[in-house]
Amino acid sequence: MRFAIVSALAILPLVAHAQHAPHRHGAPYSGLERREIKSLSNEDQADLRRGAGWGLALPAELNGHPGPSHVLEMKVELALTDQQIEAVSRIFERMRQDAIAEGERFIAAENTVEALFRERSADEDALRRAIGASEASRARLRLIHLLAHLSTPALLTEAQIARYKQLRGYASDPCAAVPSGHDPSMWRRHNGCGG
Image (cartoon, rainbow, N blue to C red):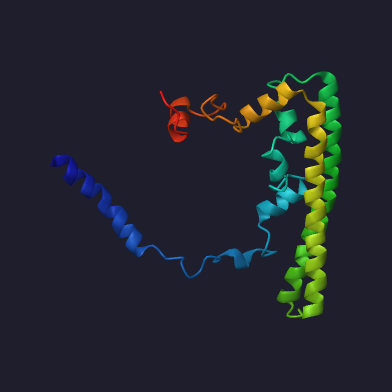
């Protein structure tokens, strides 16, 4: 009984706060209007400007085609040879340079779309051209990252690729190995592992 009263008293401030907290149901984009480019956050732009993957290579990554960035991050765990490190580094550097250049073009293209609406100069033809340029740039950016994932596995052994997938948490049996950085008991519980 005492526990129930203490628990109820602990919850009351949370309930009161929830009743007075502003509801965002009707304003899911509230705050985004302050962005320079509404479709890209500052973080998005920073990622694009440093050549980050931006999730564009997920079809390769999650289907067993490691990317050069993560391979280099795990070079010790994967026991890469000096030759492998050199070759993967070349792929990574080419990808990074190309992605940075294309990322700048993509940001500029999105800024053009933004400007059409900001300046109230949008019409159907201008919008089609601007969207076409933006989507073409995004497609090139995606291709840059996917091609790097396509090239990297050829430099690795099957055992290294299997280890990569395990380290990244993509093992086919999540109970077979707990990825580093995860609490083993929590991992097993969340993945329905017995024992």
